[in-house]
Image 1 (cartoon, rainbow, N blue to C red):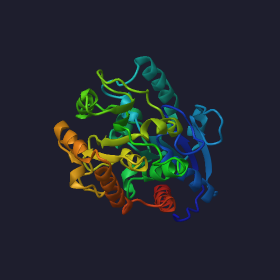
Image 2 (image 1 turned 135 degrees about the vertical axis):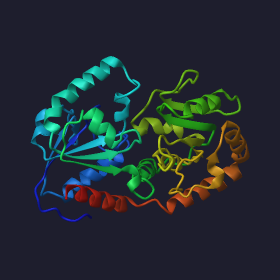
Image 3 (image 1 turned 30 degrees about the vertical axis):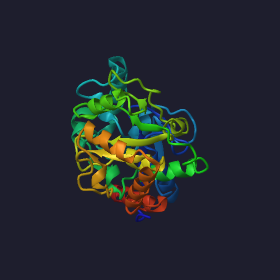
Length: 336
């Protein structure tokens, strides 16, 4: 547990874009952060807490500018702020409405301490300072990044999935070759490579999320893992991409391992190899991926490599208590 901060701080956790009603894990993208924060609030009763466009009590989240004004510290859970800037990746009407909400809170952002829980490479300090906050003066800016934690803070998702589905894990036959879940990012190869996977008649597939034209998905994006899990559990393989930063890791890798998949990785993903990735997992192009799928697409080879890859990741995967200890240290340091 992190050190005790004697000064009483007024802390508001703010979802400045889409709202979140946080009840339990596996219902939202940033559950690894939220679950640790709920525990941290309980362990730090010396502070005062509130929310903006977010709830922890089951009630409908409310946009309350007064809770931004009230706070000393604004905590921003961040997973897709970049989509609101640059080349539009959303409906212009939705963007305009979201920007109106930003304008209503900007006067109260001034001179605040900002803590960003970062879960996307596109959500940078520069983006927040110059675009989101429009150069409004803030007192301090601190990031707690998903990659600050051994095995990524979203190693928590491995624990969430294996605990929630402990009775059914590995019970369903692996009848689908490839599964992919998520949304597209511009300026990288994933759209092109996923389209080739989809079109190959020898690679059965499940796609859940947002994809380029030419890919027929089984479903739009599903945040609730209790609905997503049955679609993905039959899949054998997936492919992990990072974006903007070759040192980065993502949640897809531990999610795939929890589902009993083999996660391949695209080219220089996790170039520092913090996940203990085997060279055989690295994919250079579509033909390389297809060759490796063909090689491992028998029961013996698949199970041998699935266990080997999981055992490698297990060396860096923390327990839930260890993730909480690291999270607590970073929160307390950010406040100090």
